Length: 347
Image (cartoon, rainbow, N blue to C red; front, side, top):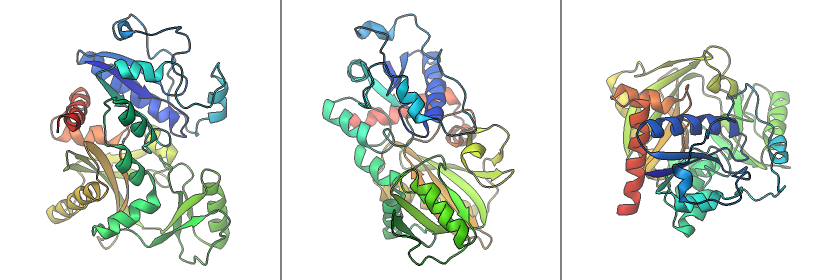
């Protein structure tokens, strides 16, 4: 197959996306596909024209990709790199090469990638892509909306609410609590508040990223994640940060967390969490694959945190570890995702 691996963009998860894209690119090439890695925002400005020969040309598509830093990427610095200075999310020739491909492998994370807008554009243009469609992407990206869908499908969530900028603390008085941007990812802008003063600061930090935030009761306990492919749950993985909580640094800096797969749970707990994961996947109308995150408190009660419709595929990512337990190495997982995504277009 001729495949475009689409990564980068202008999300706060840009660095993560580029590493995901690099690993997927390398795997698909090893699997025998003709593959190019393209930055959604920077595009192919160095090329005057593009043709289908681009998929077989000799070129190092990963030469400019660096590692993931402990800090969020500077998006303004990224925008300054673009020669045409346009704010168009699609860089030079991006849509052209995507139209030439047999499949676009979506290695994007966060806004302008995981929120459904790129998927909607591709649907209008008849471009096939991996992962779920635009509507379920948008629903899953908004944590305030997805909470309501989970509740309506009997998927347990923590007590919480949404707040908009300018609404103040709106009478919230449950501490500790967790504050997070509604549509962010990779725990960017997420804080734990233990009192009113910390809560106000947490709100300010979250509102720096978006105008709407989710506030939830902090659940003390164990954190888990469950991959779901074609509606069926994979083995559960437990994530235990060595310090603090599972924030941006702990997610992407090697050695920051202890990850155990399969998670050490009773058979009943395993079945229940996998059932909730499948139910959350169905509640949002997700197709192909996703990853559902959970907390379990000290009494054993489970709470669904969110659904990730384009989960990370970095060296420390969770979905590849879960797939490995059932016999799929990273290269096989990438082809599995291609297969289940292609099936969307043959229904």
